[in-house]
Length: 487
Image 1: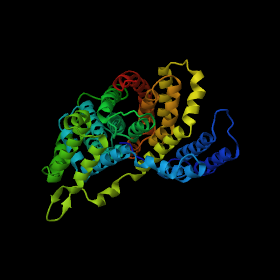
Image 2: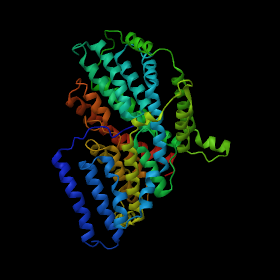
Image 3: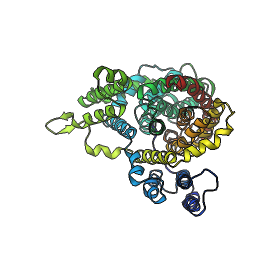
């Protein structure tokens, strides 16, 4: 799961400029009448509000989640939505799906189940350098399907550094290419794994909520995995080959017994605790219920949905006791302090913006304006959109980028005679695929902060993954996603 935890890298001057320019643009839409025929006053004012939010998101004039307050404050004043309509998006079912996923992740972290899973998996890959990197990448990607990308990278980095210490020595002078490939593998697989599930990264959940609210299109957890998991596997496989066979030349064998060290770390965790067993049962139960929800709903005759499964799993975490005498449960309310509330607020702000772009008539205006420009093949437009968002996300928040672009891409696709999902799906996937810059994603920042990587190494390796990602995402969206979702 991608988060909003990376530190701001926007210069102060740009932030102050954004603080001034954003409101100025909104003010101009209030002073000047709509300049184009067919553009209503609410739609014109919506352009001002959307631009204000986009400027503040890009420049981080205010903290990214705080910008999400703007629709609540300004929409009733601008006449684009009532306060009830503006706040409705903050209670979208997909937000609670993500909330449940976050709580499952917190439970895994609290009881170290994620670390046990990682160590057990790493013990099976042996001592070959390429296999060790591949094993580390697979574990990282799997955990990132269900956990925060950031938490996954934070947990996997010490394991990776332990292996580097054995293989490369304290000065990293024995096999520096192995160290670079391993660290980049952790960062990249943390982002790639999130593509596989709706809760794996915020843009995926934003996409599902946007299509459900605006076009009554339900993606569904299981169906999304039919698209996201193959893409994740393909991207992971290519990344492994790129890092271990092409970008870095690794030996077939190496010195040092990393397996022994990992075994000691696993032994230090002790026996599987009661809490770990319960978390594992709840996690597996939730995952299977998400995947087989349509069959479960049909078998029981109950209106089961992905959100209710997530919240039921979350409820169990708070009511199942670990120690009755001490009144200790899997999670307590103190644990919720680790919840990334900023991500949930950003969801609400983005969905509120999307709803008002549609209700104000701006979406229809965009579609009508582009209706006569059709002619360009949809796959070319998908390529352009995917490329633009991948490189834009190198310097902006992936969630904010998705929140800003999705409401605009739906009408464009409709104007071309296509389903809105044809552009929205590759855009959401692209928002999670920034591999070049340390500031692009929290996992990139975390491994770079280890001091074991040079920025040019990340740019060189990441640029190729960006390019390949453009074609993989476009191809999967144009073929597999179109088939799975009947586009």
